[in-house]
Length: 382
Picture 1: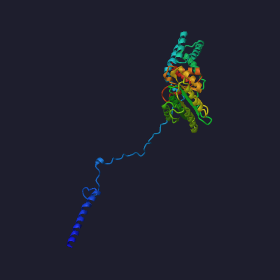
Picture 2: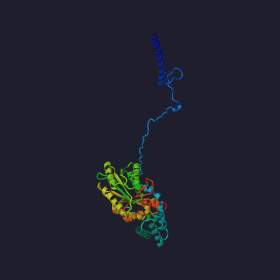
Picture 3: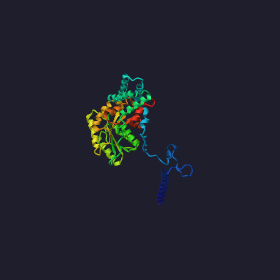
Picture 4: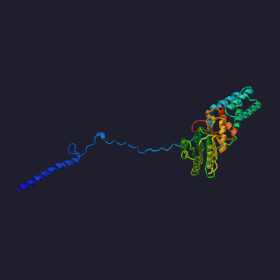
């Protein structure tokens, strides 16, 4: 009996001892050891692993995508006069050179030949030059004028007359019959046509029109993007299609979109093409025919590079046969001494020059005004 009691006591001692060993270990696993005294505050993590302090945010955050700033093109009224200095190179031939000869005390045959050569060199054209010189000779013979001011006035009158001021140079861009006006822009490769098309859009917007652009040049990868950039700057929508797609389809969709949105003018940029490529010219004719399912094209503007001179006349003839050009946009007049090409275009083709480009700036395209153009050519100091 005593043996049993002793065994129970020993067993109890072992159980209590085991509990005393296990419980502290469990506690150590559950709680971190206290630091300094009886406080229960947990230790801070080391400084090197402390969480970073969040920056203070402003009350109002800017939008993730900034809306493009809409530009307001300068009014076109009087723009040609403001850009008259850009014609300084042409002035050396058509202005000062002619005045210096015409102001001589005696005009012999050599002097008149010199005048003819100057006009032909300025790309006025042989026929137009002969007619202009014949009228000048008659006026000088009858009036007998010799002062620089008198000669300048006579020359200015003859040049203005050669530019046919009675031609209608207005752009037909007003909506009618419940649809927008449609303007087709055509031209050869390398004439800066897409850039000029964007500038034409700015001219229309500056004159109070709302514009939608059609990127029907689907063959040149950058053309649609370039045109869309021009449109974004003035708040004009651009309708475009897949690269290499059907240009006529894009043009058709652009006009339909213009009708749906109620804009004043749809401006369609076509692919540049060589005038001697029959297939490409036929395709341009298709673009016009498809667009005309909505209604007639109101304007077909041909972009001509003034530096090409008389070659531009042949280009104009071919384009006129295909799409019936109604007006010419003559670019790069500031970079050539051949400003007489304006007279040649109208004399040979009977197509009015409606806009002229006088620089690389976005608003360096101006409505053509014969009197202001001649004044710029002759200068104010003659």
